[in-house]
Length: 139
Length: 166
Image (cartoon, rainbow over all chains, first blue to last red):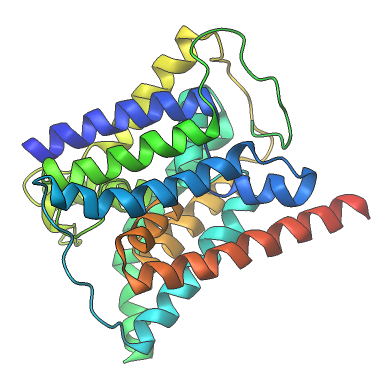
């Protein structure tokens, strides 16, 4: 149960901090393009930089090392890139990344609550239909 | 909502900058994986899409007898990151006086957005947060995902601005 409790605590902390800061992983770039506002862009960059440092440091101070990822094949790269492109594009249209949508839903935004409904249905449909179809096409 | 460029935003409660939030989230994500066994897979400390999928798929598997895949760490009991985020953000909103019901005029659009983002995120094996986390952990697939996500954000933003100015 350790990972379950840890994930709940992590969720509580980042949910609280995310609400207080309006943190969003797509709005930083969007705001910079639209109005040259760097408030959220700094969050994006600091997240990346701190994680990049914290992964090796946590291994040095007794944490579990991150394993080797190896060289990815071309199909995985293409599918991951397609996924990333879609996440970025639609998240801007949706007015926030998945994390931000959870926070908005929690502070009373009905649109984001509906978004989370689509999120849950999407997960089931992906594994029930989209992924099997995709595997059939690609392989 | 997330109006761009709105500088003043708090009525009360703790003030947290974007930069501070990024630092806290990065540390939480790495510590969860390195010290509290939120793995495998690696770099799985925070993912709003995969952890949500784990929760929904686990419940569906238990109640409807389906066999949807969940991450190894969520096999016995699913990760509760998404639940924690909702509760944490709710507490933050209530204590600061920022909780407010906001109706939507486009529920179908929101549903489709959520549906599509989940599908693209599962295809990439990570929401925007985890793609960054994987890139930071040295996963080249994460780098590819972030490398494609940024042009996706830029394209959508430019398209939105063009539509607004027309």
